[in-house]
Image 1 (cartoon, rainbow, N blue to C red):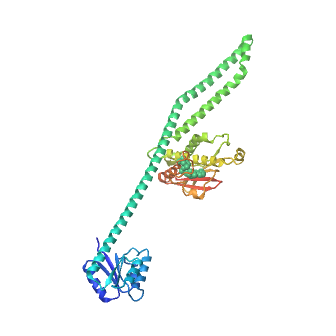
Image 2 (cartoon, rainbow, N blue to C red; image 1 turned 135 degrees about the vertical axis):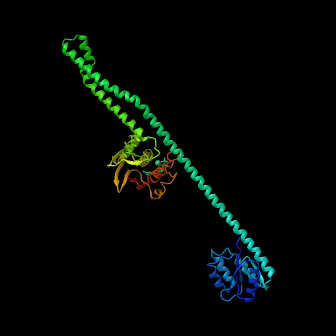
Image 3 (tube, rainbow, N blue to C red; image 1 turned 90 degrees about the vertical axis):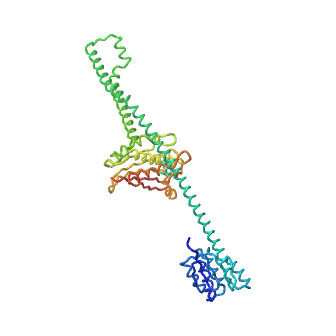
Length: 428
Ligand SMILES: Nc1ncnc2c1ncn2[C@@H]1O[C@H](COP(=O)(O)OP(=O)(O)OP(=O)(O)O)[C@@H](O)[C@H]1O
Ligand SMILES: [Mg+2]
């Protein structure tokens, strides 16, 4: 431990000499100044562990010097011992009232000086140690609290990504199971269309060759409306074919959405990802008794395939679109069906290229975000939604995926009651 330092403030050469000898011999670092002003100046650049301060000095006296030292936050904790004449009780009291810790009477007694100086330096060192320990304890407490928060965040994120991957597996499983019966249906409808066409061809031949059919046959043909069937059945088969094609494209979209994420980036069509996400959210867009359907408008630019983690980007599209729907529903709460119809709910997705970045903008005309909330929306676990409705993870995960995994950017523009736009930028 370095030796303690002491500042002596005194104008009497004999005193200075005596004090210097005693304290220097005892191993302390000594500095000496001859008046209050110089002492105050010196304290700008040295921080002694103790000050021995004479009361009677030319210029500002010891009391004023003491008052100024105690009123400066930088120096007020340095213990001060006054040096005053034996009989001077009034001085002693004034000094202690000003914040001095002790006094030494003049003429100076060597043992007394050493004893008091040692006592107060020990006290001071103990005090500093306690303060240091308190600071360290506080620091440990802060670190512990931070560790707890980041553990909670990690846990919440784990739950979220487990949910996403469980959803992904479920969706992929369903899409897979749908595929076999769908293949069968597709083939059967194609065959049945040809077979039915053959049958009608055959009936036509009969009609041509047997121009005088029995009554039972004519009546039955009327009962089943044979002419109508002839016209309608092919159309019905065509519609069935269209419906199975539609199921096929839904199943393809589900598989696109849930594609297991690769270890490294792959080239993917982002429009496919957006379309499949919209499809999965379709049930939330439909009209209900409180509002007409939410319209999604996609204006797709001519984008190259992006080098990316497609499953993770789908998760971002999902979070942004789900937030847009939430914001629209929130703003609808105060409006009647008619008012909503007059200014319909819209989500507009634009994609384009700008300065070597693929940009995807997702904008809604929902309730917007206030300036105060805007600063917090990307924070982990920040949500304005009711308990059970929002966890406050969507945007922080989205930002992490875009910024950290894709070296991109996620920005927000919003105006209260007008709407919100999120812009994803990914380098090409
Ligand atoms: N399109 C938007 N319009 C208005 N406010 C939004 C929009 N998107 C996000 N916000 C605000 O940002 C907050 C944080 O969004 P974030 O997606 O991170 O969490 P959340 O939607 O509340 O919950 P979670 O997504 O975890 O279910 C929301 O609670 C909401 O206040
Ligand atoms: Mg969200």
